[in-house]
Amino acid sequence: MTADLSRFSLIYPDEASGTAAHDNGDKSAVDMFVLDELGLTEIFKLKNSDLNEYFTTDPAVIRHRMEVFGDMVENPEISTTLNKLIPILNDIMELRRLEADTGNTENYLESLTEIELYISSISTLYEGLCPIKGRFKSHAFITLSDRITELVESDYYKELNKKLRELTNRVRDIKSVTIGVNLDAQLRPTSAGVLSVNPEAFRSGDVIDKILRLNFKEDEYTCIANLVPFNKKQSENQKTALALAFNSAINDVYKQSLRSWKKIVQSYVLENTDFLLNLVPEIEFLVKGTLLLRYLKSRGLALCIPEIKTDEIIFKATGLYNPCVAVKVDDDIVTNDLDFCEDDALIFVLTGPNRGGKSVITCAMGLAQAMMQLGMFVPADSATISIADSIYTHFPTGADDTIDKGRLGEECARLNDIFLKVTSKSLVLLDESLSSTGSFEASYIAAEVLAGLSRVGCRCLFSTHLHELASEIDGINARTANDGGVKIDSLVAGIEEGKRSFKIHRIKPDGKSYARDIAAKYGITYENIVKNIER
Image (cartoon, rainbow, N blue to C red; front, side):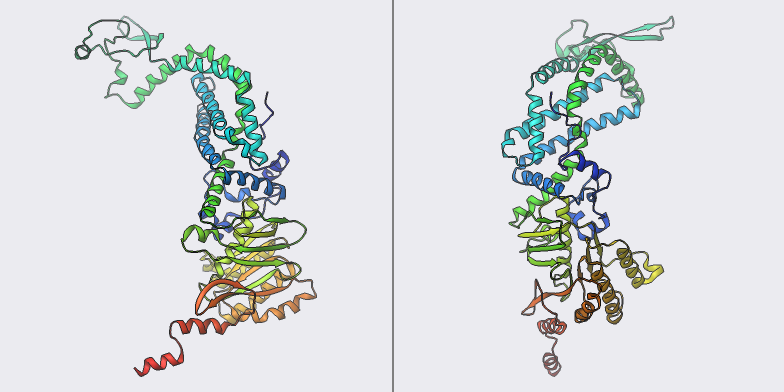
């Protein structure tokens, strides 16, 4: 007998970690709204579950999944096999749903179909995974392929499969049934039953049909009159009623054989394969995630296994890029380096020209954190990242609350919600926050927000059009230093020769230089204006 796989999971290394996840013990406080704002749900869509269900704060789970994704990225045959498996498992679940809806647990023909589907699922895994199992490095796929091999190659399974095929063939070879109908004195049916099941289909008794076949012989397979329910004029309900009657009769004929076989198969095959149904959401998550990773790899973009930190707060990445942009555009992808650490600065104010890449890099940081905590590779050349207990975003929105609170009031309310939940282990991403008011008011509120986040001690990237805010950083640092606040510094999205470079530099901003370069590019300088006037 094979080992018990009833609790087997592809995405959790052991039963304890899976139980902790299902009890919400180790999940990040990341909701689907945040993933929508980052753009991840647009390039990583799931049908059977929500993406945030797979977030974890357990480093062992993250490492386990990265091994699994590693096998799937390097061996496309795995995704091919799992994609073949999904429709089979869906059919099994549909059969069970129908059984539950009808309350009929004694339909042995449907049971036979379910058993066939289970056998097919095992065969699919065996034929797809076992020939390549020597390439696997992940514990999950090594365990799965070993158990499937052990199951399929056991003498008991082979004998059971052989006898099951014989029984299946007997049932599937039914081509027709001979029925008997008792009539009363007025020739009305009083009872009916199956007299025999036949391996041949009956033939029409029409004269024209006999002429076409050149066969006028009458025998037990020649029909002398069609049953009315299958006439074209009959309703679907009438046709269904007769079909159900026949199905019930055939079910009764094979009840004894199938009943004994169902018990035998349930004690072995079903107990050893039922775990596959629990893997359906996991399989979709892994296949869709692998599809994204393989696409990025096919474009020649870097993917790395990050160093996961639990004893310090850090986000350090070299060659970081935004995978959502990579999926949408064919242009060369600009990469950047970010370095957030406790020994230096954990909060950065990012300024720069409009459409200069501020939002792109802000989302890139969130996507890297999210992908790591899904157990995926990080879109960067290298990365060292500490686990976040949550990711919070504050991006521009057209929320309905603006009707009652006004745009600025709505923005402040959302910021306050973040402060009610944020911890030092959180990641906070602010993009063009407070853009609904004038620069004086916005800069004042933004300075308060930055001071509060400094006191919390979390990682934060604040992308803003408020260039003057950067000049207040030294004052904010001085204000929070005595309270143990973390350091704040500035980043700038670059302009080179009047063109946006989309490169991020750790320098103090010069707001005038952006305007000067952009103005010069479009000829909006005093000298050019004078020339145009004098023409």
